[in-house]
Amino acid sequence: MSGTSLTRPIWPHPTREGVVQVIDQRLLPHTLKILDLHTVEDAIEAIRTLTVRGAPLIGASAAWAMYLAACTAPEGGITDAWMEDCCERIKAARPTAVNLAWAADLLMEKVRLTPANENRIQAMYAEAAMITDAEASRCQAIGEHGLCLIRSIYDKRPQKPVHILTHCNAGWLACVEYGTATAPIYAAHRAGIPVHVWVDETRPLNQGARLTAWELGQAGVPHTVIADNTGGHLMQRGEVDMVIVGTDRTTYTGDVANKIGTYLKALAAKDNNVPFYVALPSSTIDWKMKTGAEIPIETRNPDEVRYVQGKDGDGKIQRVLVPPEDSPALDFAFDVTPARLVTGLITEKGVCSASEEGIRSLFPSL
Ligand code: MRU
Image: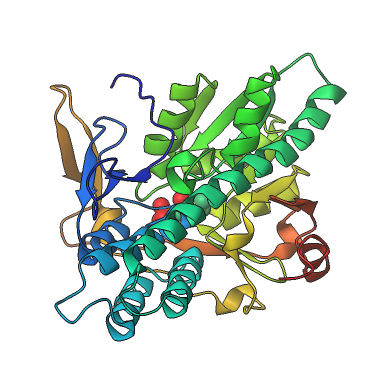
């Protein structure tokens, strides 16, 4: 597929009020399709089906869903009751990424502050645009802080590229712009530091092989796709300098929920003394949740495990069954990496330890 000049996965339609446009991430990397969302149900469906995905983008999508809710309110007007009902339905779309409820609740707060009907559409639009832009700025800042970590590895042995392993897709597709885990990588690449990324394919839905590889390729960043089981072996051979992953929810004590398989990478990193960093905007911190055991872990349709999708020799997208017809499958979407396995959190405010003390040192007022 040819190059794209897009840098965001969601935006309001430039000329049509009440329409939000998104990249359909289910079809990448082989097809770049833009979808129009017209209703709150369209937006909920897009979140549920992973048409839009990744914690910060799920948050931004929830915000735009509230805008669509205001635009499509029934006869009685944009009442609190209608918006509250939409807000609850949006929040139920997926359970793990905390950004979803965070953003929907912020918009609901804005509804309550805006007198009934009066300017509620404009208020929702402005708030959704603000949340989207703020996530992009947070990701840009994460890039600058993470760049320092990559630079310090490079400066110690400048004769070879810095090899970074990442899991899933925590790039601009997942995060509105720049990405979280990828922001430091893009910043290092732009700064002329040679980097090479090991991209975990990330079964079952292959967000790494499909999305991260596509993003990095578009940006000209050297990378290699590996099967999910390869990371530990590469670490034992000294071929991974650091791991950077994203997160869907981080407790205020530093436990990290991220795409299934992240925990195993953290264990392998610990055993091999490879630094394991988690990059996140503050919108992904759950200030009410103490331990990772409390994080709701999404289970999805086992067909995501049983089938794989890709392009065949004739250029057609095909979905094929891998295991025997009647073998049952189980599809957990996320796992929890305990704080003790995390070297540091890279946030928009700087890098801190994965601990309550570390997090509160950067975000004293939250
Ligand atoms: O199920 P997804 O695709 O929405 O999962 C989200 C992710 O891509 C990751 O877990 C990611 O690393 C954190 S979101 C920036």
